[in-house]
Image (cartoon, rainbow, N blue to C red):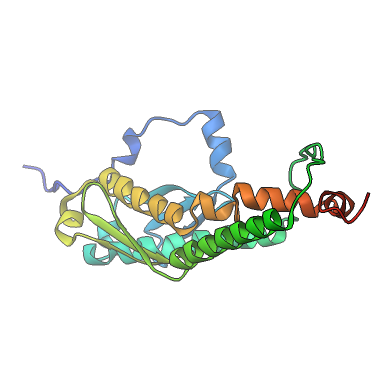
Length: 227
C-alpha cells in the first residue's frame, strides 16, 4: 500500500495540464504588470490602464495561507499591480488627442434669448455630470461574482477588500477560484470609472457652446456685434 495520500483539494499538477500558450500570448503577457501578496501566493496581472487581465493562485497555496484569508491575499496582489500601472502612467508623456477636422462655422444669427437658453442647458448638463461623478467617486462600490462566492469593494480606484466564502475556498479548484476573483476585480474596475465619466462632460449643448467659443470673431458676428 502506498504511503502517499492525496486529497481532493490538492491540485499541484493542475498547472501541468494547462494548454501551452502561443507566441502571441507570451508576448502579450510580457507587457503586463503584476502584483503579488506578501506570501507570493496570488499574482494579479494588469495592463497599462490598470485593467485586470488575470488572477493566478499557486497550486499549493493552502500551505501558506488560511483559506479564510485568500480574499485578503487577492486584495493585496490587485492593489500592488494597480500601483505599478499608475506609476507607469505617470511616467509616460501624455498623448495628444486625435486630430478632428473642425466643423464649418455657422453664420446663423443668435438672439439673446437663444444664447440664454444655451447657457442654461450647458449649466444643467454640467450639474448632472458633477452629480454623477460625485456619486461614483465618493461612494464605495461593492460587487458580487455570478457564482456568489466572491464579493469585492472598491473606492476611488483602490480595492478595499475581497471576501470569499470560506467553505468554498476550502474545496474549490484553483481554476474556479481564479475565474470568480477575476470576474469581481474586472467589474470593480469598470464600476470605478464608467466610460461616460471618463470621457468628460458631453452633450449637444456643450458641443455647440464649445464650437462657438472656439472662434470669438464668428461668435461676435452671430450675435450681431460684428458685421
